[in-house]
Image (cartoon, rainbow, N blue to C red; front, side, top):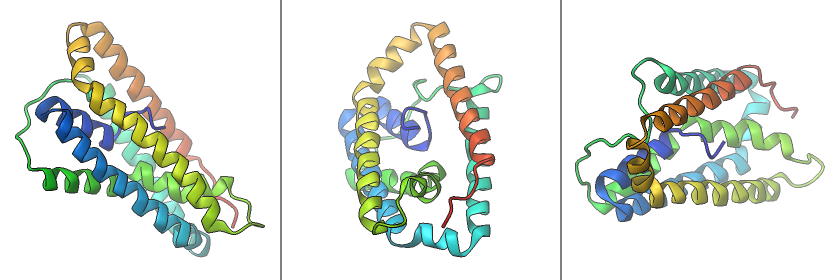
Length: 195
């Protein structure tokens, strides 16, 4: 899931390509804080909310599936664009870069669903829930920051590489779109985790 382009990766790649690695790393720090916010919310109540109000899970599940389907369509539709296509972006100050990274992650339904619907399936209800969430979420944060950090560090090089190879750009765009579409379908048929 961390390897599929979504809002975080698109934002970080565009910032790194348009404003440099430093801007990408500042934005990455903001997304990291967003991960921690989701982790804390999930560990201390988001999963309980879904258990108490099953329709909340259904709403998030449908919204997430639709959003992932939308992202897939943006990549697969005729004239779709890869997140690694170079575009012009205006320079932004560091504090705003951090804030934009944070908000991009907080509004990312892929992350919300990961913490609220996927991680609870791996918890042992006989053990205290918050520590388990913190460990699983911590692993996800490390993986997510590592993958997105590689995007920040390599976005410019990858964009230059792909720009010189239109066929590789099409393959990357279509493969990413297919993976996102697969996640959307899987999520649409996901069953609510047992309380």
